[in-house]
Length: 320
Image (cartoon, rainbow, N blue to C red; front, side, top):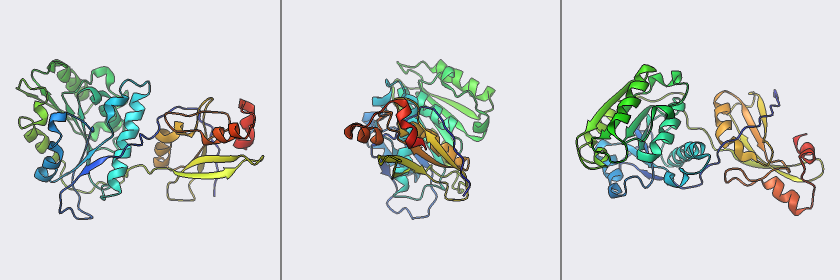
């Protein structure tokens, strides 16, 4: 097996660890291809019963993520929300074969800038984006949208949204069009903030989803979760690592070493992208480090418990 060592000192998000809620038609067949609508858990509480109804009415799979609003004020909110979205899809994948289904992100209100950014940044994972009463501004768009030019975007906005004026939606639509994205805009004439999620906007959502059709999506599989493994350093300290595999053992291996005061959690977002590029990855917890975005550095915990030194240079045996 060809082995390459690559030291990356990059920061990223951990998996959110929350369980997703999946709504699907009662008679869904194992290999049936339906649109998948990814929505924020807790979105528009007055519409809590909307998703199972929408699932049956439009014959689609609705996947609710973790409660994203709890992450909005965190310094790494964007990467945490991106990871939570992928986690929700993985949860759905354990119950339904959605790897070949077109997946659409419904980004609503305050969470929309992060959810929309995640969708537009991952055109291999998502095949559509619905911005509903979105707080997204032109400054929130990813810098490079070339790969996302095949992704249709629909913007639905209440004409009297008290939080986000409709002209912001117009500005985002124009910015997307200027960058080659097929973006439509519909202003829902209603005084209700949540109107685009109710009867006034439901036909537009249904039309958008039907436009995706039921053709299988090829080559856009949901990134796999890592396998947790353990091994020993040369001085006997037990090491913890995350193994990400492409499925082909002849692919190169990247050894991913975290930066100072950190841990293997840095790579929960980065490693799946490297796997997509054709690399197996091993992300290691070193004895000099700490928790990163909710993922404990288990090697550092053991070193501390065993009274081993934990300065930067002390991690050299772990890297070797």
